[in-house]
Structure formats: structure tokens, C-alpha cells
Image 1 (tube, helix red, strand yellow):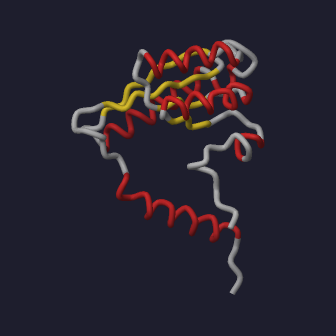
Image 2 (tube, rainbow, N blue to C red):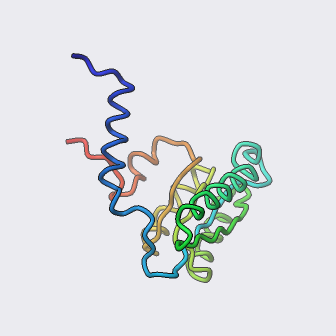
Image 3 (cartoon, rainbow, N blue to C red):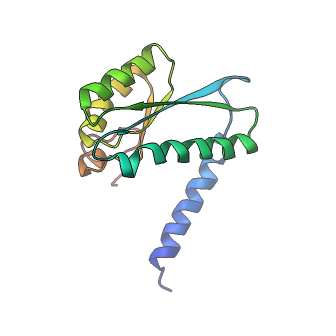
Length: 151
């Protein structure tokens, strides 16, 4: 029996979902809120593919999540990195240091995503890259916790 590509991917996703089930949607402490920062290009070259539309999508996802998990709060902060790494890093540092942001989402600039890695690790926070695209993010700049095992 041969296994189709679709079946293999489906089996992998199903096993990941089953193994992650005990971790699903449980707040760290009752009443706490997850603070997420969406850091995208809102005014430059990538505005049309990752800017305001990503904000609408993130807000919709939060509404849908909170309908199923009303006890788990999610706050969304949004900022424009202006397609500049230094601007994006300054925003992320401010979010971590002053605004108690737990996770940075988006980051449609590969140079910023790479530069953000040591800051995220130093602050013990999370970056979920949803739009920066360089193979370096899945190799030498991939987090050790998320890097797939090749053995």
C-alpha cells in the first residue's frame, strides 16, 4: 500500500493536534490575558499583502477564539515597522519591556525577522512568523525549540 502525499500530511497534522490537545487554550493563571503584537508593514511596499488586511484577519481570529474560550483574554496591539528593521526592533523591545506583550506576530520583513530572534530569546518571548520569507528562518535563524529534528 502506498501512502499519498495528502494522507501523509493529514496524518502528521492529526498527530500534532492530538499531542497538543492537553495544551490547548488554557490561560497561565485564571483571568490573565495574552497580549499579542502584530508587527506588519502598514504603509510600504508590502502593505497590500500583509498590512491592514492582516489586522482584520487577526481580529476575526481573536473573536472566533474568544467565542469558544471566553475565559481566555487576548489583547492585540498593532504597529507599522515601515519595512525597516531598526524601527521594528524598537517597537518589539517597547512591547516586551513596557507593554508586556507575550508574542509578536507577522513581521513581513525577513531582515527584521532575523534581527528579532535574539531579542525574543533574550526576553523569553515568542515570535510567530506568518509572512517573512527566507530559508534562513528555517535553518540557521530557526529557534532551537522549533527546529525540526533531522534524525
